[in-house]
Length: 92
Image (cartoon, rainbow, N blue to C red; front, side, top):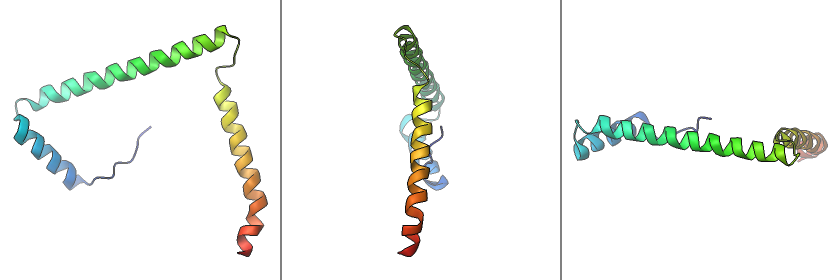
């Protein structure tokens, strides 16, 4: 899931300029490589945690896809509320 960034291209260029000035052009690839490895490690750890939770839920006899059912119920409730409040909103 991609979150929108609230910074413009000029601000990104300024940040890159500052990073190059502080660390030097020869260190930037090493820094980027280290950040990439860290992000990959974090993603792998997150996936491992999700898998463990799913396995644990299955062992306990729980449905691991319960969140899908909950999301459907929430959407149905939102739709029902909108149907009820729709005429009221239009009057105001």
